[in-house]
Image: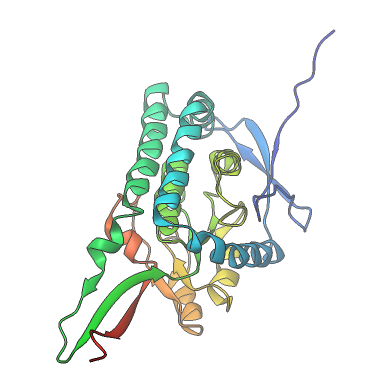
Length: 285
């Protein structure tokens, strides 16, 4: 008896669950050689709104966790990803047409990125914060705090796994929640990564992954009043100036497009923080 293979439909990841698009739409994901790989959900405006609602609900708990605990969770993501390394290598080979060695290098770089940012979780405040000199008997302290909900367009067309990790991980370090639009042509590793996140102690809603057309989804995220920051790293092929203008209506922080995959950096952590300055008397006498 011949067994039929079961093609997987890669669903969205919203609020810690894996729903299909509310629109019922999906699209075919093709391999590098043009063959059929899988079906992926085609996210809609309503899906984007649901993702923002889930992210907003998760901000308080995630930002309220200790910095050390956030670092532990990010390190746990690296551990689980390491355990599924072979699956990701195989997916990248099939979807991006990479050699086994190149696919392995990309997966290893993604794992190392999680570890790198995990190490910053309880340290970046010491680097970016300050005790400010003031005239008078006061303490004056400036401390970076999370912006809130960050909407991100992942790099498109290359390094689908590494690009996604490089934009999601830094936003999580400070305690933000993320809504990310994955690589449209190569979304499989994004949803597989979501399966890793779902089993890595990361609270539901802290990361929400949408697959489909960035050109369709990004405008709604840019204009959404409950999104606090907009990362357009992978939006270079879109009308990103219009997205920036839409974001300005609600005073969002905007990170502009950049070519390729961004390198790990402290600047990407600080891009999604706001500085709180506190005054306190030194003495009541």
